[in-house]
Length: 299
Ligand SMILES: Nc1nc2c(ncn2[C@@H]2O[C@H](COP(=O)(O)OP(=O)(O)O)[C@@H](O)[C@H]2O)c(=O)[nH]1
Ligand SMILES: [Mg+2]
Image (cartoon, rainbow, N blue to C red; front, side):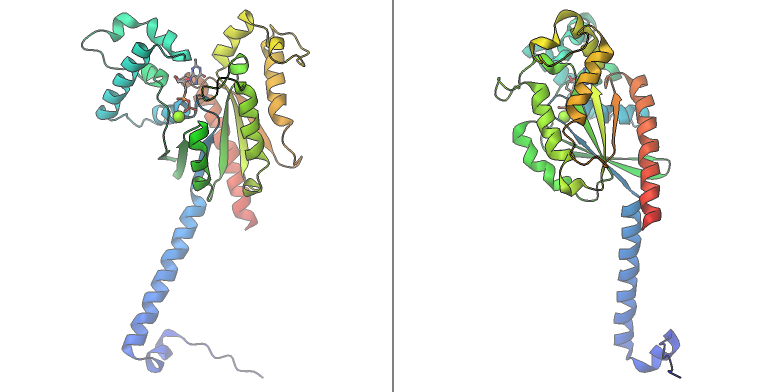
């Protein structure tokens, strides 16, 4: 019968010199730390916010802070105050200018401090990558927000490690607008192209994708003033009917996905509406935690 020789710690004491023993313990300790690190990395939920410029990625992240009770630091509030003044002075072509113009008297007061709602409407293009960790149900949720402009997109590929889910935002009300970058490309088509490269990317084979068709509040207004068929003649529904328009836009995105087995979840959202995002995020959280548990059990 073969004898199995195991080295237990007391035998080791005779086999190795004290220096060798110390080395061995050290290396065991390092292995233990690496294993612990791996486990906490696996437990962490990493959510990547992707989508074209001005689709609402940073606004969604602000909502995560508000909903989970993480205060904006006083310096940050001051910074937003300046952004708001700039947004007004520049009168930039953005959805939020109207919001601020409706409230100029309050904002012009010397003791003005931006409210949460003001902060949600403040528009500043994200440069580089912003990361934010929020513990939710005792699990660290790691949010990664990136710049959406063409010039910022090469940076996206730095954050693709260990991603749990991608939240892909689309500004659904922009079917009649062109890109800031070239003033030609239709914004919805640009967004669809970006989505194509993400959803069909092999890097994200195991990553669930959650599509947010955002700016529903603006879409509601827009369908009464303009006809989507001017920009998308293939639209065959009722151009004044919100569900028809939403179904058409959703179809533009679901149709580019090549792998029929890859799940794609979607929500119609208004990122500046805290109550709406609260409800949507609860559903998203359940989806993510459920899928995370499944993949942990499969390991
Ligand atoms: N009315 C409205 N404005 C929105 C919505 N989502 C984002 N915005 C505004 O759109 C602008 C661009 O949003 P932002 O989050 O900076 O887009 P990002 O470039 O994707 O990070 C900001 O002024 C936001 O306040 C929405 O659902 N409704
Ligand atoms: Mg941003």
